[in-house]
Length: 146
Image (cartoon, rainbow, N blue to C red):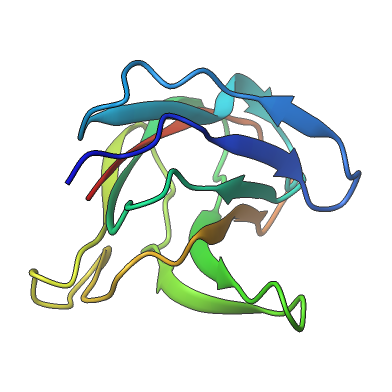
């Protein structure tokens, strides 16, 4: 199943819309959720309207620097457009050091650490919750497929 190539990201707290260019209208659609930056607090949640037909997602958390003892947890949530409420699809393990963490939402996989046995809804929200103000540098990107 081919996907439409439209994808919109907006900050759920500030209401700003960030246009996103999807590499191709095929089954491998890559996008940036959080660009690489040093952070000492939780950034605004990013809300994504996924291309039509997107059912599975792979989200790549790349931690490139950590000072002190930073603690961060990432969440992927579905958004119900009727009520405006978000519901949790996946909560990452606690991330405390440099490295790459893969978060998967896929109904064909067994649920486990950083993996949800589920299907992506049309709108998702991705958040990063920092437990302290120790600096941590990371980026988050994603791929969705049908």
